Image 1: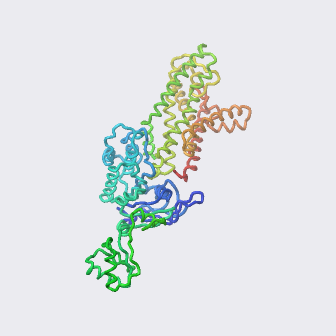
Image 2: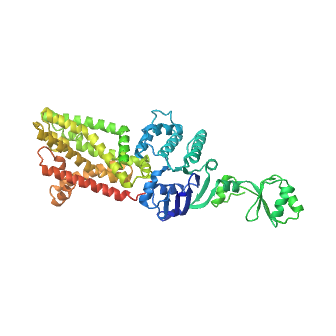
Image 3: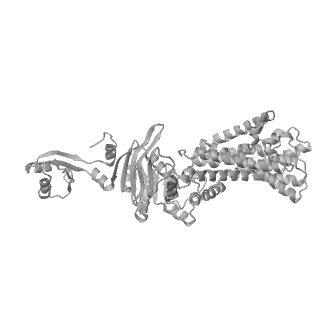
Length: 307
Length: 264
């Protein structure tokens, strides 16, 4: 079995000599939810369009389910469900007719999935209401239902929670998590809503001006964002012992680079400093660290907001 | 590709536009027949221009562009083409499915004219629209009073099918226009402009053999819209071949334009 669902190698996309994507190399593994984070114009939609075949790369390659090449990629795209920018809807048809239209297009004979998907996204009571009369949130839900036709193995959703009410956001979040956990669907989701992505994704891809700035797991992101006291000293081993014996805490980490991150006593820094000093440890750095998600994102893309 | 065609036909069946356009051509075909009947009776003298406005060739030159706009360009606006491509269909399959649906929609809106022509030929009355009669209106005004043997019925069927193929071929130019401009209004405007230009060129072609020869290998020229029960089999076959070749050419042009196009 192929380990990677999607792999891109040095992907580049230029429009009139201006790079919309530059040297993007990514791998997406099965059963994970990837949050694609970036500002407007960062290249999120461009990346998704390249993967779904709506656009062609200037250079570099795309590997889908272990296959490369134009014909092969086209075939493998049958295993993808996508909603990019706006849902693909026929405005004068009902939700059910829209689902039927896309079901026929994908060659899925099973009619029952229409009602199942409507139920899944909370649109089963829309009856004869035409899609043109739907709210933005309802259109988004229908777009997600359409993307789910045929049990895709890779789901690509561009700003799927735009226009959803708070309850709708929770429902879609739970749905995506359920798909990922129960059906091992890999999901690539872009959003401006960082706190929401934080609650949904298992992995994060930070993109800025067409370049991947950082890829990290949820654990790593939490680690980076968690508030702590960062201590650099001449003897981390001795410091660890003092933290355990004198400050009675195990809530710290000694990093591979010999930095010590203390997650307790954030409001009693003077006490920590005093204990370190009294035990004769020479410190070269003693500072409060940790970001909000937004600040961390800004620091990664090279902004000037930081702690 | 079959799935795409099936889905597009399902969508066409559900759209209000095709029903409205069908209603328009039904009313237009009836008005056309009434005017042609009245002119023949001498009670509507000088109304040829108005009668032509409701004729199949004029209505199709307007509504054909509208349909291309709705069924092809419209699918860019509502992201249907995006969905087709991203779910693993080739660009070629998308083009053929759109063209087939578009051609089917042309046949649907031509049905009233076919029915009115068949009825008119069977009631035995005289119809006249002067020298502006083309297409089914021409068949009606030339072949009225025909006594239909089984051979004549088959010939009429052949004429009807040929005229439909000629119309489809004439409108096939809308496929590349619709897929490149992506704007329904522009498609309608350009195609109506094309029909006016071709009509002027045809008039010039009467005195210019080169122009006439060029037009004769296109469905717009060569008197292909003047086919009737008196037309020889050779000319009917030529009309069909010219039309089919033109359709293939237009689809080829569309593929070359759309094969590597960005779908925004």
